[in-house]
Amino acid sequence: MQFGSGFTAVRGGCVALLLAILCGGCAGVVQYTDELPDPQTGRSQFVTTPATLGGIVGFVVGVPASVAALPITFSVHRVEQARAPLRADLLSTLLFPSFAFWRAGTLILGAPFDALEFLTWRVWTDDMEPTDADREAFERELDRDDLPSYPVEAVYPPSAGGDGDWELPPRPRLLR
View 1 (cartoon, one colour):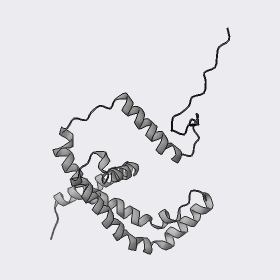
View 2 (cartoon, rainbow, N blue to C red; view 1 turned 60 degrees about the horizontal axis):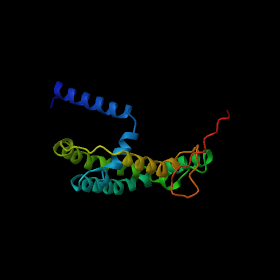
View 3 (cartoon, rainbow, N blue to C red; view 1 turned 90 degrees about the vertical axis):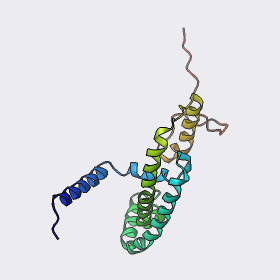
View 4 (cartoon, rainbow, N blue to C red; view 1 turned 180 degrees about the vertical axis):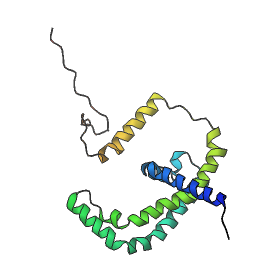
């Protein structure tokens, strides 16, 4: 059986697509796979159910890969532990192959349904513009949930009330 130039073009297109995805980094892919099974992102059960099932199947398929990769992942964990003992997480390092398969399963089963739902429904519906109060609430939620994960200290510490509001220092008075 002889393959013609059509097969070569398809193969070249696949290679180009793979390189484009790899050059973009994995942060966007990870965020997208986090959003696929989450109904709070505006996706219906038409998308979230296959994405969740894909994640479960991917994780289960990845467990044998995690067991097979145990010598390598344990060595990586030991190096991590020597470099940064507070950031070394044994479970996430040893189960890295399972987590990768989980993301892949979520993406493989969820993305086609997401694309179909997007093209037939979400693209045609109007998004409501958030109000100033909605934006402020969203920023406070980001400060409360995401800011502690960064290894920095806030310029203005939270207020003593503990309600998550940021307390600005008093403005200096000008002498005349």
